[in-house]
Image (cartoon, rainbow, N blue to C red):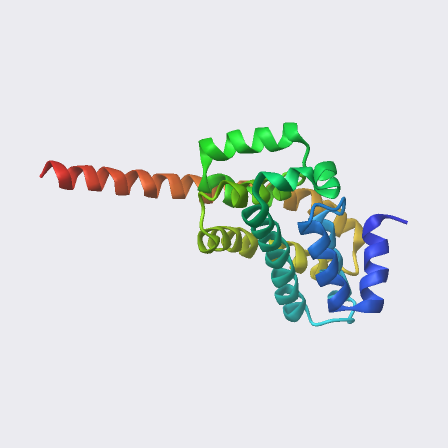
Length: 207
């Protein structure tokens, strides 16, 4: 039995609460793929065990709650969090150092793109909180924007593929690439917008 099938059975029995709890675990860095969890939530809606729109909303809240908890944990405890046994297993000093370096280099862009980087989200969010360079509001807005892209894609994909698992498996693979492309396009658009604003500001100062 695949992980997707096991999650479908669990969610069909326990409903929204199980999906929400699983997504909190994903946010905490548990070895549970967020995309498969979201797809499983969509599948049980497609099979009639839940309402797909409510499922999408519950999933979005679960994702954001898990991410926010990691950010606030880093913000409150800073580098000391690295000494916690559970966190030390998930966030090694080497990984923490790499994320710090990337965060210093890319800043807000990394916060947005972290949603599309499996295995890196927890490290990025904890590091963002620990640096104290980003307010919680800015973090939440950037993470929320990314989640508004990824969460509905996976939930509705599961919903429409609930009765055709071969089609669903094919589109899970394609969906990963599609989300990356969409995220890349949005990142490029954001960079262009920032560049135009800076150019505008410089032109105004020259005048």
